Length: 289
Image (cartoon, rainbow, N blue to C red; front, side):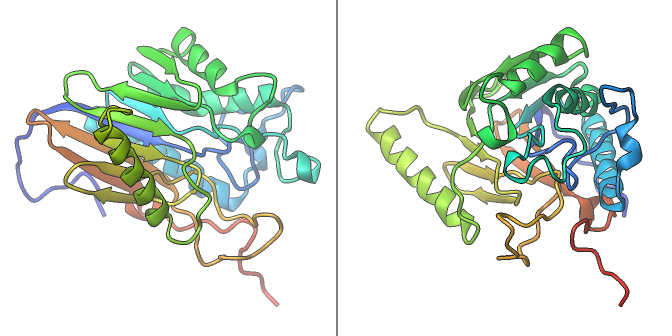
């Protein structure tokens, strides 16, 4: 399937084209492991990539190609860029527990995606970061100072972003709910209470509510808001050692949002299946018996 092929010539002018990514979990055994990742001894960590990570890495590179094709102007990262220490399991299933090494690897993956583009980042789950250092702040700074991001902004745990050249306002945070069943209901409820707060002049009116964390994609297009739950870049892994809800496999990929010159919004998801890539199975692959 050619994702760029169209049967029609449609001439639409876009004022903004924005790419969203989230939950890279770089250097996790089930997460993103980019080329050019090295440990403190200079060992090439990409040599440790398993078959599933090869698929995820190919998908990441294809998503960059898609962003280039659409001439994306901004990249928004919903956090959890690094795997973290996995201290509950003593660093198990992490290619390297050195947070500086993980940070370098995440920057290596992000650099070609953010070059000549605006970059926005927020904090994610404490478990995947450090209590002492704001990893996503450091990544954002280095992407601008060292890797050609046109502009780089870090927004702590929640961001309100007034999108230039539009009349749109974005509300961004990493986590809305832990609801693994019916997360649409949880996010819909949050949007409902935000709407009440808007009517009471306690909050500005958000046109977009964007969240990460759940590793699943959905988009609710209502007359007043777009609610977007972002996909991830990590294969399935057992949460707290349990196979509960195993059938709810993650959605792996990114999202691109188009805002045209009439301030109309279109949202495209680009998951692995949209890139003609198979779904990766790393800890749950089929074995011969």
